[in-house]
Image 1: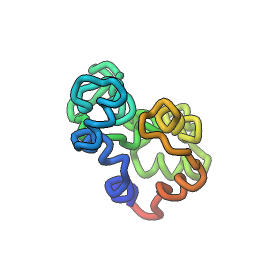
Image 2 (image 1 turned 30 degrees about the vertical axis):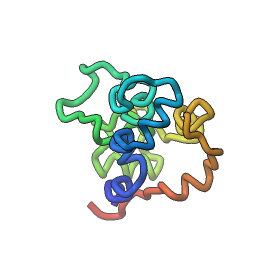
Image 3 (image 1 turned 90 degrees about the vertical axis):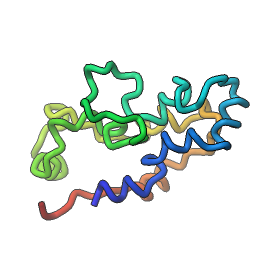
Image 4 (image 1 turned 180 degrees about the vertical axis):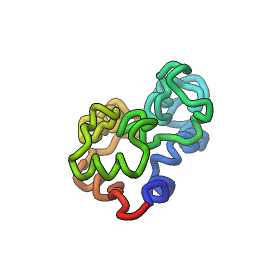
Length: 139
């Protein structure tokens, strides 16, 4: 269950964590004077598609979803069906044709880098094991 795996991950709470006292202190220490849940410096990594134009977001878009699938894998409106996901996994579907991005170390490093005020060394292989989410066998 890919959704469940995500829902228990820190990525799903990336926006809500910005409301904590710790986040307020981190923001102040970083020179951010506004509320972290409203600061572009924070939201660019804590909300999927934060900087995308409104026309590129579904009406149901909500920043409180934090960092969702599309942050790593691109807009999912075309590839979200189980049949296409299985075909991508099998290598019979061209990923670019359906807007799917595999998401690798470089994708992760756009946020998990030394520019983050809470940066810790990023161990890609170890972290990937924690968030791995295989394609289900059945619909």
